[in-house]
Image 1 (spheres, helix red, strand yellow):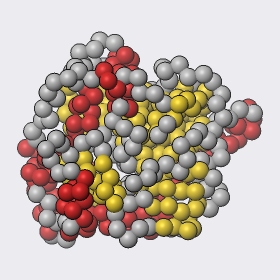
Image 2 (cartoon, rainbow, N blue to C red):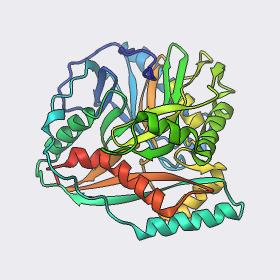
Image 3 (tube, rainbow, N blue to C red):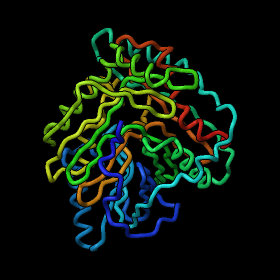
Image 4 (cartoon, helix red, strand yellow):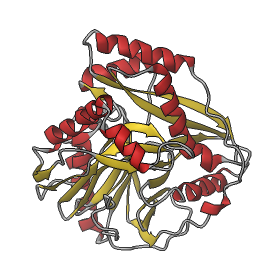
Length: 385
């Protein structure tokens, strides 16, 4: 299958040399964007439908005032009623991406993904609510926290970022240093909005199967997922949501009838490459926010699903399953889901993984799916924890 990228080239002028120590790093395909400095914003997009357009207007006004190309980059939380953390800066550069440390992973057994009776209980509770007709799907997550051996936090971050880049060109690898001193690092398989000259691509994933040595190969995974009523049902929620959410902003929308197999290092997924053309004034940021949160990370209907997540998980997800990416003053940009990721605070690293629960889900199978998703970051952490 072709890469979901519209164009594997930078779309904004290079304005500064890359130094590998940026506040924001985002690698997609053959290019890495690094950005630092500028002004940090904390918009709350859930409070105003026009908040995204206001931010883009400010970005363009700043560019006109300074005469320098501006980039907006950062992270947006899963819950849009919480503040995003975005950086507006002219200190940004695209460089050809080279994963110099992908071979630096220490061989040996990976740390074992943890067991979670609470997660199994939450899945059972969600299934009861689905059976009662309260909702049709909900995505539940769990975490595990480890201590880093590496005392130099920044060195650990760079090694982890570089190792995750070795996962392959189909993941958007990111590292974001936040104002509170924490960092978020991950290798997202899922593009929410890639925009270039108003051409739009989104590539949702829903319906999953663990991938491991001795497990199903591509042919078998295709057969299993494409014949699974549960997985096709789950995937259908997402494509319908996107068609309805982006339809008012885009024309020439093309949604394939059936999904295709999409592989990551640890999972097989059903994926659908949806394309269209945005209205000229619509930016990548606005397109991403129109879609988020999709049923792939929240559930359906959205309101009851999000309330169930808050109830069962017992707290904020912060940026896990939110958005990470960038937009320039022309409206071009790329935003992906913050998945297969971890947050670093001090010498501790917290990993996140989730699974979609629908009628027919099984607590043990969903627990195993989250364990498989942990392995992307666990593999990169081998020898670091």
